[in-house]
Length: 334
Image (cartoon, rainbow, N blue to C red; front, side):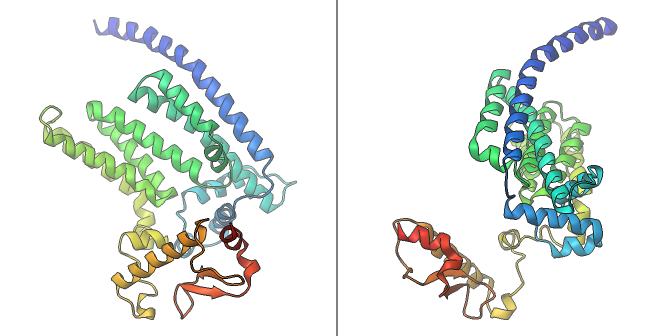
């Protein structure tokens, strides 16, 4: 009987793959064409992209521990650039052009894989038609296409986050330990790209434990606890070395402020954490007033308010050189 079931499941799986091959091929052609066109017509990479390429160069030439501790960004995306630049060793390109091309090709591949992952995620949640049109619409959105084609980390981050959620959905059906382990490992990779990557892992873990509160979906604890342990251990094995080197979860100032680990410069200013929070909100209030076209508050011709944490007079400073802050001046005149 088991042999008969295996023989019957083989043709069924083959027919299902034939149905999915067409939409996936269309998505790959659409995504690859859009990304290739944008990459070809990109004259200058984003400023953050230059930082990622410099990060990748430092990983190739400096001790990793020093690079990780002195960089605000997470190392996942720069590490892929460093590896790709070694594999794509074009002798006729300069180091800068090789780094840029490596970053763009990584995002091209990540964008194509993201379309496939979104297709299967939509299929798992709804049906293949919803998955196809969701992935196609996302790839055609101007902002999404632009940021996932430039030398930025969004494409790889969205890819790992989508795959994490896809594995989580399939894992919650049978609480498969090995599939939840893959989910945790992918979530750890997502965290290594951006600190927000910890969100999917926390959400899946909360779902595993939260379902125990509903009698309809409750599972035996001997099945739930190993599944949760597999998810957590896999994520810790991937992201743990980076956290161990830093001594905290992230090196980004915003992340440190959110999780209560931003201790630098507090002693220098003689500020308590509550006061630091008030000054942080003051910065955002000033910035929002500057960027609001209807607001002329705090603005005078020839004088622009800007953020300067290193200044002894505080985070908000007046600048007489108006040309250096042309975007603020332009917005405030409207």
